[in-house]
Length: 283
Length: 257
Image (cartoon, rainbow over all chains, first blue to last red; front, side, top):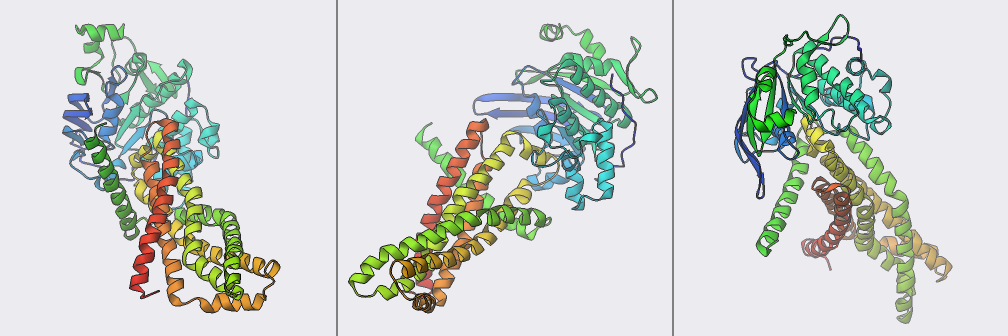
């Protein structure tokens, strides 16, 4: 298992939103491309501090749900509320403020290939401060140290491996300590060892900063690892929880099938579900 | 696709392009302005295009002198070569050919760069990080292209006159001083105004068309290639079409014959 120094990041830059509002609410959301109905009335709720893993076969609208959450796409019907703010009603320009409070790790990292690792991680801070100064450099190094990639500051994304790019993408998403994190298949296409490193980072972020997270994944085992492990700050690594014990941060599972939510519950409920489709998926 | 759907798609494209143009202009009056990006783009577009613009200008001026000399000689007016090269370059060929060269080089560059960013989700990532791609990517490219094309056209005009001079002196055996004074004295305010208002419009067309096709690229690397080609074709055709309209318009406005 990977170990990492526990260095606290600074407080978030963006003003904190209404703490009583849930992190994310989907209310009867529908989206279609032509005749292809991808989402058909999806409703769920992500509480503050909760981590929810989103599953479904390819094309079931998992990644689209993340893009909808950020307002990168608009639904055809329904309402999406992020940190108490209705993203479906607002125009693109009005959403930039909200997006400062949300971090997203894209499926293929989506790092800016013309910028160095440091500039990628610092992107959001540089947008606010204008220049890459000592303070930004300190925070960039902190974020990169969190993902154990401090030595890559001056490299370009093309010089990194797939796993390293995902870790840089995580550093870029967490540098301003957002209130909500969205992970789009963070372990997709990676080998099991690298996947484990990424999952450990996500668990570390979850347990150290208690950030609300929505994680899209193809690998059920990743979510099981997250549900059965906890980050040990003393030992500085992820450790397995004793059987029957749950991690401090609430962890839930959500399954999408044919554009609808067919399961939304915790590990215990998932283990005892009677839904044949989910049983087959799990097996 | 039915004709109605095709027509709707075309109208939507025009609407989206108009929207992009308006946003790129409106962003000039909103913060942040991304001055560093503008300077970087000005270097890429302006300084980077200098060699191709100088070469194009020189050879155009030279061949213009060569082609017209034959006709002028028949009327015994060979000394008017400077005048002809000068007005043709400043009013028409300088701005248009510089525009076409920069369109070929930079509209394609912008379309492929932005298109690659779209298909690799970098544009979405930028939006997700709270930055408006229209402000960060489109407006700096528009400002830089308009600004630099203006000066590139001036350079092209001058080098074109030098190309004409080379032919006049070496092949036509004309007096260099006579050529220059002819070329210089024939130019009036209307010529300069027409010649320098065109690159402002052409620069705007090049940048907005390049960015529009780039931002609308779909379908992976093949889509990026298609967007690049379309950007060059559309910007070149639009430059020529706008040139005709603007020339007629300016001739009427400036009471110019």
